[in-house]
Image (tube, rainbow, N blue to C red):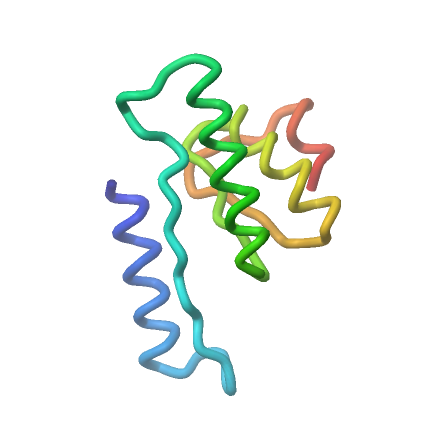
Length: 99
């Protein structure tokens, strides 16, 4: 949870200090990794979370906790030219080409 707390803090500071003039950042959180779900159902949940964010009209995504799940959502966000990063996933030869 420390990564999520850091993201929340960053958004609050950016908005409080007006670091992006004329813009206000709204953080929409989706739980793509419910601990009670495993296997294929967990992958389905991660993809559903990404799709629902896209449908809400987000203009950027902070990706999943897992590199493999981040690469799944990156396939969708890169196709739609929505920037995506992750605070914990690592780049590999498989997901690096999606960005």
